Length: 131
Ligand SMILES: CC(C)(COP(=O)(O)OP(=O)(O)OC[C@H]1O[C@@H](n2cnc3c(N)ncnc32)[C@H](O)[C@@H]1OP(=O)(O)O)[C@@H](O)C(=O)NCCC(=O)NCCS
Image 1 (cartoon, rainbow, N blue to C red):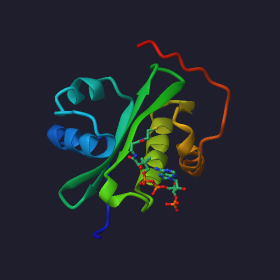
Image 2 (cartoon, rainbow, N blue to C red; image 1 turned 30 degrees about the vertical axis):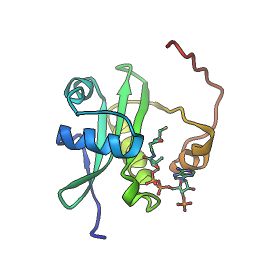
Image 3 (tube, rainbow, N blue to C red; image 1 turned 60 degrees about the vertical axis):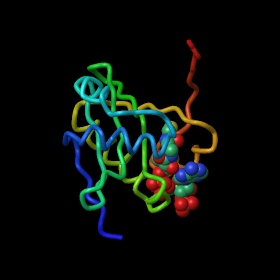
Image 4 (cartoon, protein in one colour; image 1 turned 90 degrees about the horizontal axis):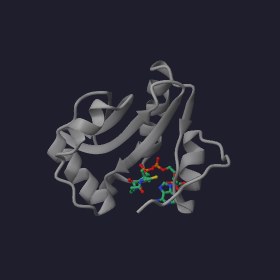
């Protein structure tokens, strides 16, 4: 496989981002919502295999100390090669450089080892299902 290229805060091809989301999450996504989402983001990181978008992570924030990791995504065809870990670590570096003091994430129990490997430590937190 060619070397993966990582880009910070570079505008992705939005239909390609929707396609990546469909492949990894199985959700319908035509990419159309992403320009407005990223306009509010502190930062984001993309991973590219040649011209193909194969990874993405978004960092939302409160405008101050707290940043929130969202939508960590790696195409299943290139999974378990360290791309997800690299995306998250680069997002943390970019969030720090952008002024954030804390990076939050939530995840299913099966991804505890993944996020621990990225650098997160467990903490008490709350999650409320609103819909
Ligand atoms: C979760 C995800 C981003 C991981 O990306 P990745 O590039 O495959 O991750 P890495 O190769 O960096 O994984 C590093 C380690 O994390 C753990 N890990 C990664 N994915 C895992 C999974 N799905 N289940 C259990 N452990 C996992 C493993 O310990 C792995 O090391 P190993 O391959 O040597 O066993 C990717 O599987 C994905 O996009 N999943 C679908 C969307 C999703 O659930 N996103 C997370 C939302 S919180």
